[in-house]
Amino acid sequence: MGEDKKYPSHETFDERLNRAQLKAKGPEAPDDPDTASRVAFKMGVDLVAGTGVGVFMGYWIDKWFDTAPVFLIVLLILGFVTGLRNVVVEAMRIQKASEDAELAARDAAKDVDEQED
Amino acid sequence: MANPIEQFEIKPIANLEIAGIDVSFTNSSLWMVIVVVFLTVFLIGGMRKNAVIPGRWQVMVELMYSFIAGMIRDNVGKEGKQYFPFIFTLFVFVLGLNLAGMLPYAFTVTSHIAVNFAMAAFIFIGVTLVGFIKNGAGYLKLFAPAGVPWWLMPMIVAIELISYCTRPVSLSVRLFANMLAGHIMMKVFAGFVLSMAAAGVVGMAGAIVPFTVNVLLTGLEILVACLQAYVFTILTCIYLNDAMHPSH
Image (cartoon, rainbow over all chains, first blue to last red; front, side):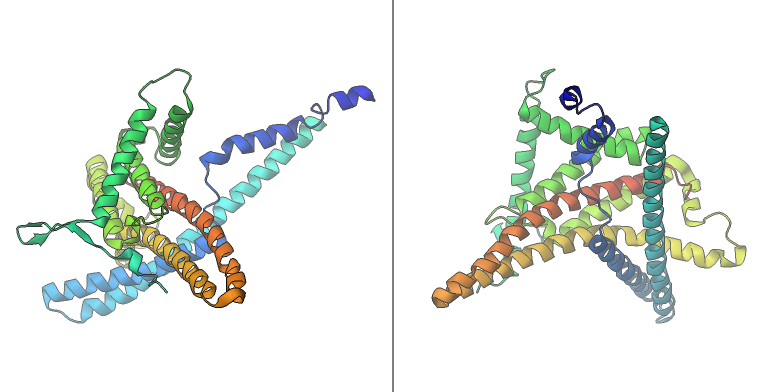
């Protein structure tokens, strides 16, 4: 009984290892950049930036070729579509990242199980 | 109550004009110079002993080095090493400007879209050039993803092209909006403290609430300053990676 208390580190070695690894990783990854508010902000900027760039390009092309307002209208719509595309791509990236993290966590848990068996 | 926007005003310190263009030395330029001088002293001073077992100062410099080196290795790959000086300079410069803005009486250079967009446009042009130099005309494949039916191609290419051009906008707007919003918020809460404290004893007691909020906001703003410098740098790495391996 007394010996068990003397070496509490033996049983919780994996836990301690995990904790130490997390701690070692800490300063390398400053916070998770995918929190909800940050994602919302990024997507908002992406959506507006697409439309904005489309309008900007359309306006200047029309000015150069004297075709107002053909390119302005076409590129406004295309710009909006681009904004949507950027948001969808970003959403897919975040989903993939979270799925990867989940898989990695499951694999890690499996490894621990196998070691215990 | 002080105007919360006043802190972003550009004030010329020395008026200069070259070929009809106003190039005055302003408070913005002053803070850039301060940050560059500080960073130079910090980085060179930290490495002056170049000890095998580093001291505290040297550890700080080495941590920054290995942080950026790791970021480039993970996001660009081994060939990214040659761009290390640029990425590192970019990171410490943006981080320095963001953090300098947290000092009392300081001017937040990165709260101006002109500064951020100049940096983002430089990155955009540089990355595009790298892409064409490394891949030649093959870089244009970035705009034509594989497996798209031919009748959709013109539209997809146009969308990808616009998407490519939104990069500098979203890169600079994100940094600018975060810095601007944070600093306005701090100034507004500081204004609450003053105007409540002026309203007698009850107001004085009530002023503790916005004061506490401001203390917390200061911590949050320091986090945002570091995080936005990180985001700015990692996006540059991701764009650089696209330029070097345009597999889409």
